[in-house]
Length: 344
Image (cartoon, rainbow, N blue to C red):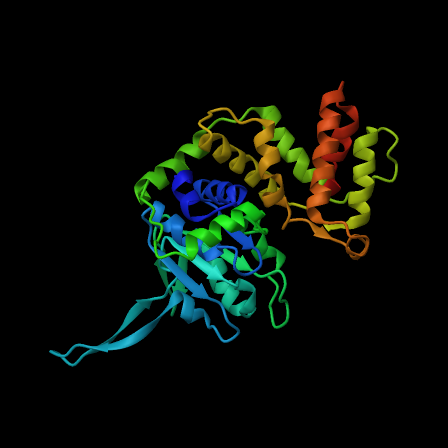
């Protein structure tokens, strides 16, 4: 399946892997990148490879919730003359929904998509309508143009399993794209899985066992991202952890919640399954740490003033945690941080 996607999507191997991990975990994905980096093509290609129904919603300031979910119309029976309401499904009724430029629509419309993402259903005129299964939302954002946008609230950002950053490709990859797309031949891809196969894979991923130390590693990573008030007295903390804890307290307004810990483990399971392994390793946690945590950590103004990014902070958290675990003896220092009530 990855080979089929690479026929169309050039130079974005990490992006392909992260999107597949999110899909096979049953999660939704936020794609952030400037225009022209094949975000729409990637989602369309995924739907073809997986033989899923695809729908694209272009979010605009005048988009209404009913434009997404659907609406009820009055229908008249020509034989009896009786009138009744009939629900017309909106574009959200698909297996893969591309929510293009989701931050360009008002919060009321964003909330309609939020219900669909969280509940797997939509409500119209007091009636609930189930969405197709499987159901995945892949939303895009343009990080450059922010005028006239409606930033997603933290509660809605937390519904996305991954925040995937799409960056410019290398010169050779860009040359390959130019050569492929300026000719008269169109690249076709072959279906690999069906909707039933995908549902089975999602179920299988959840059944993969994870060792308690690996799950604790993920939990500690998420908890270490949260500012903790009582860390002023850090004498008993390992130096690496004490230093990063100080930086978190200074530069982070709030960190990842329990859903972050859950998605770290679930994403690591999916990554192991895609690699053909039934064993989840710490490296799997590290590989999914940035897409899971970067939109769950809110940096302070001081961090932005110093140019400290979320990705850089996550690297520091991982390095500190790895250094601690390598030198761990009795665990007395770090447990104070991870088990404190203020840390969650």
